[in-house]
Image (spheres, rainbow, N blue to C red):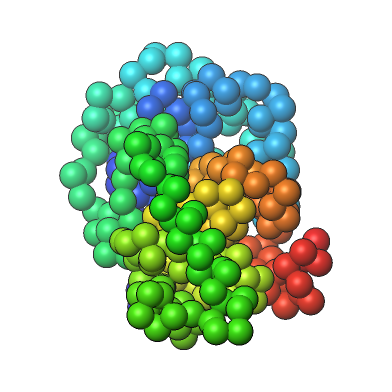
Length: 321
């Protein structure tokens, strides 16, 4: 299958929100390139953060460790000072031997090249082939960075007590000689069977959420869930279900679910969500080993595929280092 192409800087700038999951505002996005292919993106919290030498050094470390030699610098701001932030960052990249073939910013819906060229003043397109491709693969765009982070917050005004009570009943029933009651626990039992059979349906009832809480507390199942994330497309799909699950659970079950979200979003290139999922996992369960491991990996230059292979082939998830 051919990859969708981007022919102008405005095309790239218009497509960035579909790659990072939200619309940048007063920020700078670096697009790491391998030839004509986008390897990954990184976005500053604010555009003037790009002037911080420590931020630049960390960025360069990641780029060089991943053998990136070409980077597009794309800012998003109506602040005239953004060109200064871009110039400072560009100079640091050049000093490190990193070429910047595309440099500029978006202001008031138009692209502005640095220095000015034939593309300057071009309005951003409403759609590109790459946008349509991303949407077809399940990508969505939040209005802001904070809006995207909010999608991982525990569901507000939601009573989790019934789920916790049902989970306790299920756990007790499973550890007795009688096992699950086919009438009382039928819905949960059916979902547990589907989960172990490789399916990942979206839960909607107390019994279904409780079944997820039981499943995710089993290390064998967590390994099974992680093994499903081998492809980026699968990681994208599964992450959405796990986000929904995690937002409704509590304590260690929520910690496990959010940790799986962290892995899935990191593997699918959504680093902002991965970092927030790590935070939510450790908030729910400070001792969650996978979340602690991910907090290290997410700041490293580890190859995602190598990491997933190592994680799922360790003797136990706790042994993975």
